[in-house]
Length: 291
Ligand code: HBI
Ligand code: FE
Image 1 (tube, rainbow, N blue to C red):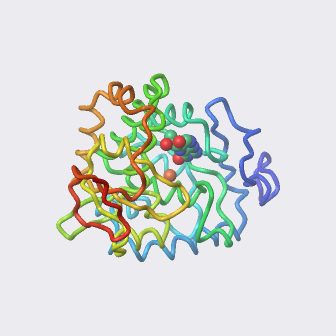
Image 2: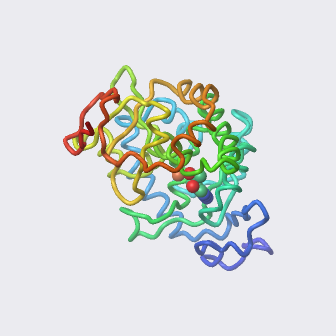
Image 3: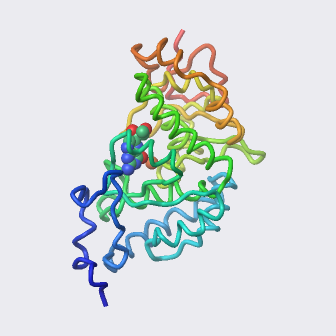
């Protein structure tokens, strides 16, 4: 029986219904309105991904997936938030889709992670133009159970608010891209993935670790802030950290403003480049050596 305020099934989860959004761009999830087919799409996507985690994901991510106790139903964000708040103070809030940077950074600074309300169609399993519920939830939420990573994402939100005021958005977005979305970590068992854009895509998960096409370069904050990226395609390079502490220290110990001033209007380093100063862990055959 639908709740009185729940709209008809399958209607409310239309993409981008920003009309219902509050000033902070959040909306109600309307959990009861998800259709059986939307739950099945979640289950099919999860089944494809979760058998890759053992081999390809960092242990902190695997621990987060276990803690979330995912099953074949789209998660109810209110229930997720109760468990998450107790662990690291984070909550999951619902948004209609991509939201303006200002509101995005504000939510992260408040330890409120925005997850998209709608889930992709079956014909979008391989490629999706913008993040959906599956990418946002399965990619980003498990690591918010890790205290150090959880600190980094809040620090990133605070840095984003400062970047907006200092023409640093493009450079800071690169930091998010090459860590939160497509980051790798060096572990005792070899390279492992922690990036959400990798772990929510079976093709990218395999590519990031198994392919010898992309380069794997040791993380260097200034190098990452200056490195361009493309949003529609597999990565040309991956940047490798040793720990999430390294991310927190890079965010806390760096004065970004001089970097924004020095490099903010310069062209970015081309995708797939290897620079003389790079500490290359694995040189990809797709990389181009810059003299
Ligand atoms: N909005 N909902 C949502 N999710 C994102 O990941 C997101 C966004 N807006 C902006 C944005 N990401 C990127 O520009 C960040 O690098 C700021
Ligand atoms: Fe994302």
